[in-house]
Length: 376
Image 1 (spheres, helix red, strand yellow):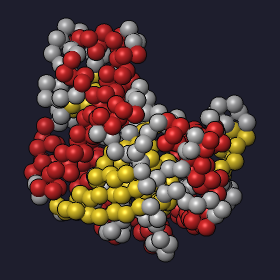
Image 2 (cartoon, rainbow, N blue to C red):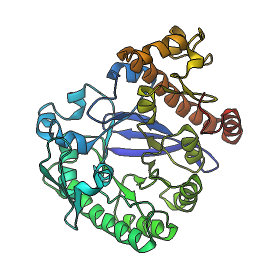
Image 3 (cartoon, one colour):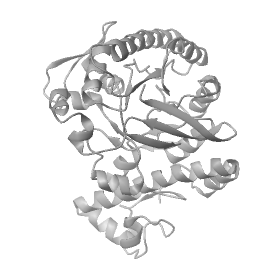
């Protein structure tokens, strides 16, 4: 299946592992920078590799609309198109369709929606999603799912989850038994909203088929931290122990650490790159808003403890100046720093697991951070 996973160390529920994919090896726990349109915004592939990125994410929905799978296929797939030699995971497009709300029509067939690019009607079925991902030749493809609304009653969540399970079976059939030889591996997605019984039913349905990895979807959609952690605590211990576990779209550093403590291996989120473009920069003690006037005369680095290129060479005053002038360099320097922070966070988590010191490390991590709503 072009995908093997080995757990090398454990500390409580947390795991440090090695995920071998068609285009390389990924040490877990791992964070995947998001390259929505075939680029991680403001970064070259060489810069990403230099920061320690091992795997990145591409967006099936957006690449299907622009430039289209045919053009990418003529480059040999997304790796050749964007000049990234390492592993790539592509999402199914389900979350983007979910976000369209009034522009979409959902049925058992799939989804029909008006393109946000040119207004034309577009169809996305489980088979369509898989065909696009096969053309992109990603190392990990995702089954198309129906992302459950929040909040949702148990009846609403059940109907959504059961539709996702039927779509998962169709996605699996298309990926592994369709006309195209699979270039990688297909992951299934556990759904069920905030209802633990539905999550377990979803997991039971998925385990009737052979999935090289499983994801937890439908979180980070407005639920409380207590609800999210409750779902993880009831679900993750029952997920296959010998397969990678991917928590989709969850991206605050605090949330990543909490999920690693509960046994999650893979993460993605637009937060580090999007926050960078909006002047919100991550540090060991919390988030800094570089736009605040307090930084106008600050000649010190963004984070004295950070060895990234931005912190080694530029002051807070300069970063604020670039942001206020809307200079492209400001977005680049902020992105370099934020991605460095996230990727270094994952390396620290892995080292703590291997050393058997994760509880101590996590205690220090949480103690050092300001409240989530306190932005300097």
